[in-house]
Image (cartoon, rainbow, N blue to C red):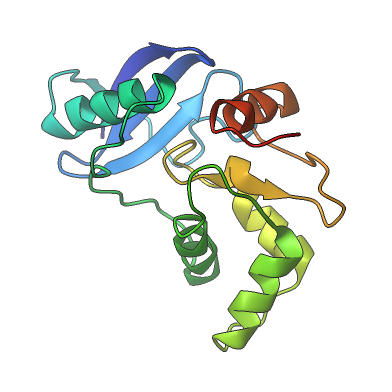
Length: 163
């Protein structure tokens, strides 16, 4: 597993890759930090996927047009993969709720409750790029964010979401 660190407006970020795809992006101090990383880590900042990720993040934080996402390969159960796939469908500057994600999963034949969706969202190993920060509580509240609610607020405000 390859890793590198980047600085960002939300603090230091740890990126992980299998050499081809991004497998992790964690905010320093976030809940479940580096949970899917094994101990055999090699620092390798010059991987193309890390450079693509840095370019994407730079554009994101500058509110510039976003380039294509780098290849993503988050590790998790089939249920978590289904939730993370739905997260990728939430447009920039828009939000949804845990309940709405659960409803969409049930419509596609996947048994899901909002609490289970919340667990999958919370364990998203690729923060920001897989936009778990765009998921709100049923009442529109900023419930939960592994990186901290203040960072969730920052990311949503950056995208123009009125809180």
